[in-house]
Length: 56
Image (tube, rainbow, N blue to C red; front, side):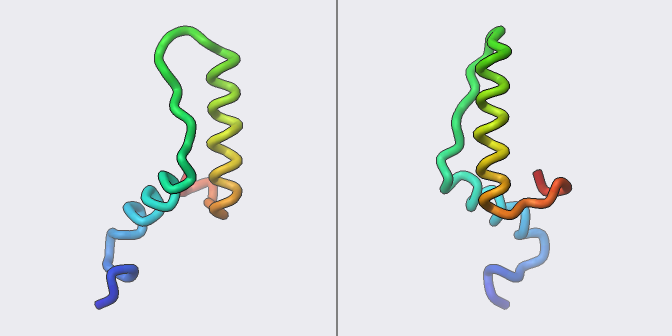
């Protein structure tokens, strides 16, 4: 069985693809503007990956 088609591996592969995009990090603390910027950048990655709402 090919590695890409193992049951249950899809989520792991999606995470690996996401991490290859070097997503921004969000440090704790009160920073509403930083949170919005972080979310916008992550959404850009999801869009580039063609992620469905369910997989986000």
